[in-house]
Image (cartoon, rainbow, N blue to C red; front, top):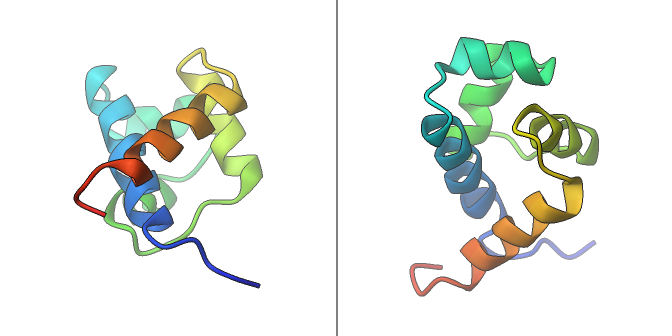
Length: 82
């Protein structure tokens, strides 16, 4: 399976941006999403890739659809820094 270049970095930046714009700590954000703080921290640093389940939980925690979150991630991939 081919890995999309820049995907983990784009997920990291997008998740961190959503969390900080919401004014939440990693712990609070994780609680709202039903995920662990360690998992959120790993996503935000790009140490871990995100499952589709995790992305949907994250999206719902900030009142977005999964497709809206994926669109933000795709936009981040398109930025010149990738």
